[in-house]
Image 1: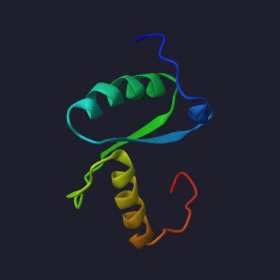
Image 2: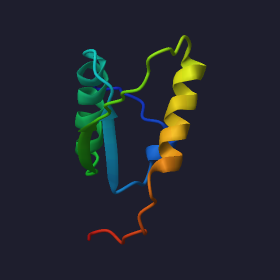
Image 3: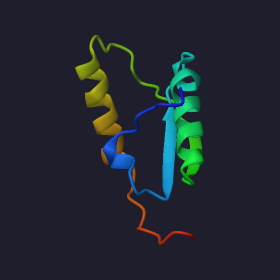
Image 4: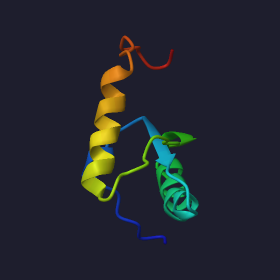
Length: 84
């Protein structure tokens, strides 16, 4: 656990959003990342991902299509400077 290698995309970030997707894996995967990021001085915001409307999906590709369709319906917010 003390040698957790973070993705390069997280290097130099001051604030990170970690979202779990349930089933227990959100805790299993998120807590080590939370600890590693906070040890590096990163502000971490935790949330969970709740999806509905997945009836009839049979593969990860179907789920991806549902998520993309949802994203297209969500209005984009204007960028904010940090801290806000």
